Length: 577
Image (cartoon, rainbow, N blue to C red; front, side, top):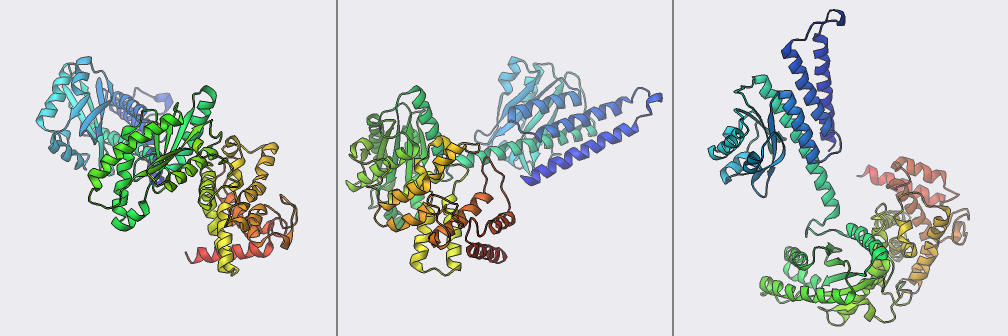
């Protein structure tokens, strides 16, 4: 993308230089005579090319680009009619994107130019902009264009490919009512315009692809986990304001790990794609499917009660049974799926609560043999804070949802764990100590489950009142894991990871060696990651600046010896690649 931006800048600079040369050709103002007609036209053509180049350097869409470019090309070439056609790869056709001067009959004939297989292959091989369109399209297609133009009394046509980097994006066709033969300079200018327009199309497609990839799962084509939290939050907000209730469904493929081990990951990927397609085909237009994890999917069903959502899932399960039987009948393992269903706001009023209850309901379905659905309302006395009933798996799942719902901190817990591991190994902690450090780093922010979404996703700096709410998370996180068998020894680390070395931290004002060693390590890792990753209310700083800040605060906020261990370990890691 940087190369494309550089190319656009160079092009604009070159065009500006051309305009300057034209100005220098003119006589002084006092003795100025009417400019030579050819020089004036050349200047106008350069102006048009410059406008098109400047247009593609700005954020825009295909409609705006096509229409602006076509207007400039028509005026510069002094023609009466024109059209820009973009190549549709799936339909193997040129589709009319922008036009000037076409009557209704002409539009009906050329709005879609279907290509034969031979024409389509010729278009894909159309690498040389100097190759005329008559050598690419066959006589039938060319006659269609010519006959259509005659409806508008067009006698002369000029065409140019819209191509860049060896890829054709479309064609531009211009016409006049006279038998006008373009000069070599005209053709060269038209080809230059085509190349510039194609560069703009290429940039727009690249941007669209980047946006799409940031929201979708590459394997299944469904929306991804990050986008799931955005949509769920918006749907809860909608249901809260306007009603009616909405449902969230989480589902897992049963025995998928064994299936992968037995038949290989290629077969596993095929099954995941088949289930994703089944989900999309059987959902309503208003329902949205997501790939939430490896073998886990999520469905958001607006204006649907949990009981009705179960009926939807039962119907999908029957369809999936038919699909899996047809595709995998020779394999011993039956790939059913277990589902957990929650209803907003009946079962929970927060994103984390809904997800956690759905995850818990999945465990209930699997515990009952799998391939069934469980409603959150059927779980009995399970509370959304899971303080007394959570399993280790549920706590880690909850930590992942806490991390994923903040778009500016996504992946934060894993980065903290990696940095903490590095420090722990550098000071030669035992294997058990490293294991506890790693687990505590992954769960250090789990107490944020109790922070409202409006604060977590707020784009501005929190107010003092909101900071007070945020500061509670270390104590609440410790309380949550303290009641879970197998995690209770992590509670002191989680509780004290925001204490300061000089005693000015929270929640208990511990200082120096009274702060658990693992908490002192996580404090450094947390601060470094926070400084070096994007936040909506603060600029990112470099690695060097972050290390300098850690050293400045050594002895006050951070353990000075651990700060030096961290900096040296980072430098050693950088030098070794």
